Amino acid sequence: MRRCVAIGTEVWITIAISAVVAVAIAIIVYIMASKAGYEKRKREAEAAIGGAENEAKRIVEDSKKAAESKKREILLEAKEETHKLRLEFDKEVKERRSEISRQERRIQQKEENLDKKTDAIEAKEEKLTKKMKDLESKEEEIAKLKEEEIETLERLSGLTAEEAKQFLLKDLESQIRHEAAMLVKEVEQQTKDEAEKRAKNIVASAIQRVAADHAAETTVSVVPLPNDEMKGRIIGREGRNIRTLETLTGIDLIIDDTPEAVIVSGFDPIRREIARLALEKLIADGRIHPARIEETVEKAKREVENDIKQEGERATFETGVHGLHPEIIKLLGRLKFRTSYGQNVLKHSIEVSHLAGVMAGELGVDIALAKRAGLLHDLGKAIDHEMEGSHVTIGADIAKKYKENNEVVHAIMAHHGDVEAQTVVAAIVQACDAISAARPGARRENLETYIKRLEKLEEIANSFEGVEKSFAIQAGREIRIMVKPEDVKDEGVVLMAREIVKRVEDELEYPGQIKINVIREMRAIDYAK
Image (cartoon, rainbow, N blue to C red; front, top):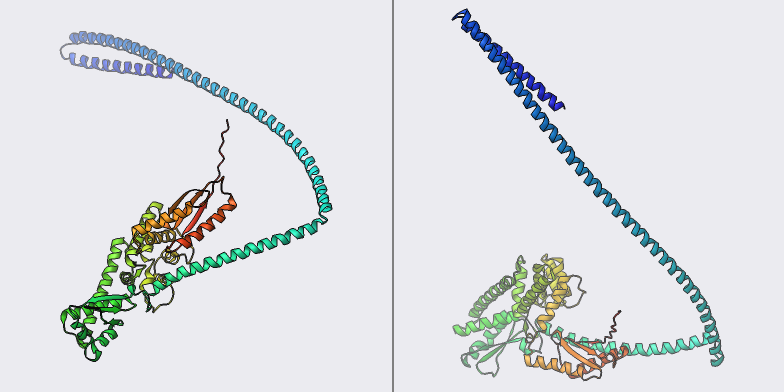
């Protein structure tokens, strides 16, 4: 209504303005017509006034019509909007009523379920109470029967309960003492066997660091000669040449009846390599005298040192291990001249580094850290006898000295089980070291011998009664034996494992140790229908 009133007011204002304009026009026309004559002006003014009045009336009528039309449109729009709002309101009210009804139904269902559960719980409580009463009565009966049984046993045996207890304890004590004695004997034998195996490893490692008369293949190098006359020139007048060479290099030069060959003997492979290079240069040059020998030995030392540095850098480049201290790189290069069971230690370290990187990648561990620990795990083998201790301890001390990561130091300490592996990286390095050493051909064991050893291992296991299947795994370091549960009892598994161990120790020759894993499994499967 307010909008309609406003529109009417605007119309009347427009009409008023139009009327004023018309009157103004009339006055102007009148003034202008007065110049042509009063009568003429009068007629023209009357005509203009009449036209203006007519125009004003027409404008007023048009305005009224327009106002009425606008009023009807506005009223119609207002009615439509009101109807639309009413429909939406009714729809919303209907939806809310429906939602309330659904919630009421859910609440009612929950109440019914709770009532049912409450009834069920009450019924269970009643049953449990009844069972408890039955159990109490049965316990009383059992106690009475036990007392009667003890009285009967005491009457028949002529012993009191305390005397029978003491008798059983003495018998049990004697059995335990016997078993303990057997266990001690077994542990002592195992300790002796393990000590013998470890002693062999220690001797093989010590050959690289301290002079020894055994294992000559790891302590000598052979230098070919163009002819036997060269032997006299190498010895020199009154042995001056050979003494000079031995003094400068720290090795022993053996000149015997071997045709056209000289043996260079020494516990230090680096010194032996220097002597070999120097001797080859002297033989090729032909000028052999103390001054020339000294010059040639110095050149050979520089060549070997340069070769050591290049080998260390090559190892770091090949494995992708960067940021190592220059001294550590030199020690890695020295590993080229070290061997373990015939396996080159530098190549072994590179192999362990690669294996550790692959395993770390599969396990989601830091690959760079694992490869670094794998490359440095045998670093202690590069040190000669000037440092005491095992290669594990020496390697860890060197890593600490040159500020290596604590995890790398721990991996070096743990790779032979000297300390328990506390990190995933240490466990990876330990496993990779065993893998690299155990693969066929790594340590002077041909494929045929390797396969025969595995077959013999499985043959020994399969020869026992009750064995279903056996599998030699871990490159022959473990054998898993599946036994038939109906033929072999739990207590028989322990005895079988011990018997297999004895036969393996008696019939096989192998490096390290073999794990005998006897498995007995009983499964009971049924289906609830």
